[in-house]
Image 1 (spheres, one colour):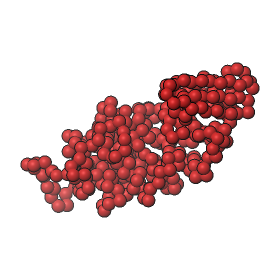
Image 2 (tube, one colour):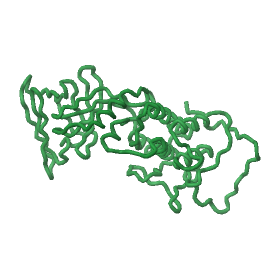
Image 3 (tube, one colour):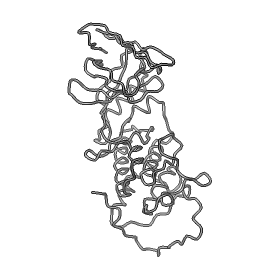
Length: 335
């Protein structure tokens, strides 16, 4: 890694960033310069929103703004000075050898090719200050999107169908995500949907699952539930309010928000119970189910047992005649 300092070629410069509280130092050494950052996190030591001018990793990537930091890792928005484009950089703990499984996961994720998955551009595993460079994704996090106002059910179904299609490509390549959260999915009105963190997040956090397909499917179903209702059905900490529940089972989307089509209600519940009988087991299966919603006709589906609380008293249930297919024009994707 090479650090280019404001003092000129080959100069050494020290930045002190005082944030108060417990202070620890980072010394990033390169061939021609050094930077010392002191802060309360001991990771990158820079408060969120701060700018670090003229620091370039590999003589190319300028750190602009720290997005988050935890456990000795930090994620930055940076600028690729060579190509003049924004990038995302995972800055790893200095002075340590990068584990082989992390290197392998990043290499495998870089080979997955789908425009809806954030691309990995570059990496440097030198012990001075290892880092991973990936695509900077524009748009709004799903978390913020839900908090600002719910989309129409048709758009919610189309968004998660796209996400499920993209993850189906990753699963086919043998690279599940395993760390999907509302902040891993971004939506932009001009570029569409983008999923971040494939390969990187799971490798750095040590996440694993006995059934990767079911794990990613449940996470996608949680995002669909959030887009339909404004609530989060999982146990993971998010900015969204927790979904209402009854005796350990979350209420179905139709019981939380009026106007949710019954077919989307059933698909969401089955996917949330991925791994149970009659559930949607894989991202590809979820994508197929959601795409079928956009067709003019479909067979009736029963809600999953684990997602159905006690029905409302006095509620009239209309029973469909056997062999009749229901038709709808309400679920065409929004223009």
